Length: 340
Ligand code: ADP
Ligand code: NA
Image (tube, rainbow, N blue to C red; front, side, top):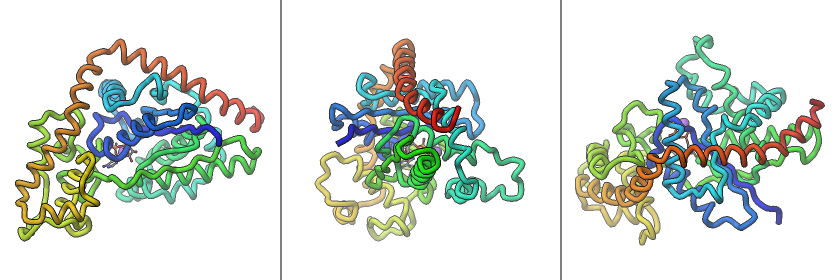
């Protein structure tokens, strides 16, 4: 069969957190380590996506280095995977424009993330930015410019990937079969981590409350403090796994389950039955212990890597060069068929 190309991205809008790790980065590393020899792996720090929301320039530049260091700390190997900053490769923006001329505004307007982000600002479209609206087109360009065959994403991104697929199919229909490669979505087995302070919402870099997330740089002490303060509920009877009605406790069980390597439990329900008569306090102690076991080696590697600015610059430069080469093939073919 054809060699695979795997592409995925993360916004450098903060130090990656436990949700990013369990929901995405851990999978990226696994895909890298299990990939066939002829599989290409491309992982991008999508800084152009980051500026769809206003960022402090100094802060963003810092976060870009933090995020690059974190990709290496979790186990991505820059000799095996292409790791690069999106804005270092202009082909992403160029293909985005060309695809924009093909993308339906009606389709973009139906995107759940757009609707969520804009629901409070319906009355004031003066404030809504074009970049936020066309974000999925840039995401499509990211994937399509590298001729990705497989795109691992979380559930939150599945709709955008479907948009990218439809855009590729439409483009090929208009300009010629086979110009763009229609990617397959690799939905991660659901490992969604919720906020520790508002467990009905997902853990996110963009949450203004630092206590809502475990950062992969957190010390053991910080991990214990945050988990101890995590919101549970007022039911005192027992520990049960009910994500809908008991999101706080269920999130702790999810975290415990996902951070327990070689878990002897079938699923979170079985884990919950084993913890049934435990106090919240004891459960939180267990969770914090397992989270620290997971984060500890990452934190140690990170602090080494982050201090080596020269090495990080070299990795970024080399990644940019390899990604530029990867993107050139598609851009050339696309310009050709469009008449540019
Ligand atoms: P964030 O929302 O924290 O800014 P990104 O949008 O940059 O994260 O997403 C990077 C990757 O991490 C995506 O694949 C996304 O699906 C995954 N991800 C983000 N938050 C979570 C979470 N709370 N649980 C599981 N996966 C997540
Ligand atoms: Na996000």
